Image (tube, helix red, strand yellow):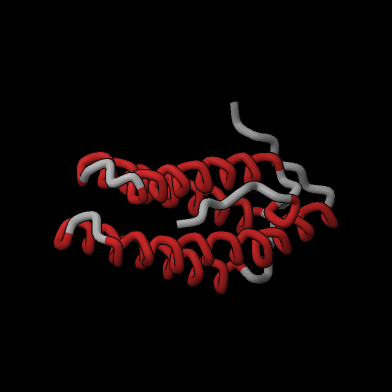
Length: 142
């Protein structure tokens, strides 16, 4: 399973969002490594649960800033986020029912990694450009 490497294609240009994306990618890579090295259901489950929780947190934050700044694609973006959360929930259910299978690892690779990379590099980068054009900066919360 390939890991996501932070590249300039993923750079949104909004500090808070970029830092949260780096965290999401880090934990997705942790999940990928846990599955690849067969670290056991408990480790895989805890990593997937953290990824799910952090994804919910990040999407809520991102949508809050989209709404506050009048992003015209907000409703469409929310639908994309909802679809991703549903995919995560399905993967969690698969893990509970079948354990850490190769099929689960393959699903994470094709569904999560591909979706996250494409979503950030296309959709979130457009939002970052929108904010920059408005002169909006959102610093990382310390």
